[in-house]
Image (cartoon, rainbow, N blue to C red; front, side, top):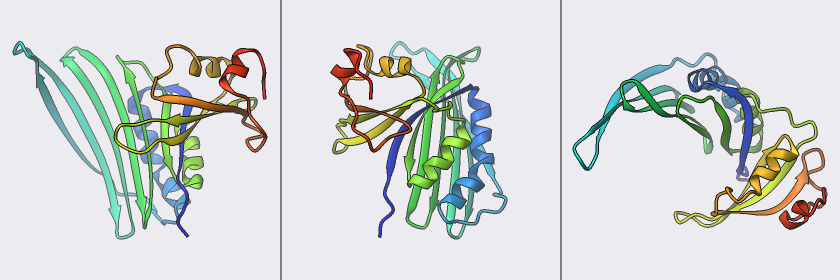
Length: 213
């Protein structure tokens, strides 16, 4: 039987991108174990390269630094990346952090980005349920004691529509998800309490009117 795939978006305790990449490497053993692989102590191989971009007027942007850590064995592979995008040597435009873990036919991944040199505050997670639960711990999900689950439909030009769960630690973050600034390519299907995900949720309109699940 195929292992189901879940897709989640979570809020994390604000963490610098470099520190978050280190957490992903250090947490790889536990992530792979949740996928049924015995990783031991992964032996990481690091590669790094600087790239430049050229603007229409000939201006040279960069250097942007792309660092990749990779560890492999016969039955699993782990990759953690850190991208530092610069428009000039003294200005960081954004950071990107990502990780991919494969074991047999299972695949787990995560990605996060931030503008300027701000810390990482949100992550996208995809993979088998147990591995995604482990990833939440590794990246430091914000406590969900009285949080909400916002069920979204994501429309993409590259693939069929799919569902994603946005895990909101507070009602304020649910309000942000329903704001006019929310991405147009995602539609809120319903909102449920995190401690009662099987119970009926409320619609986006009902939430705006003050109803709570």
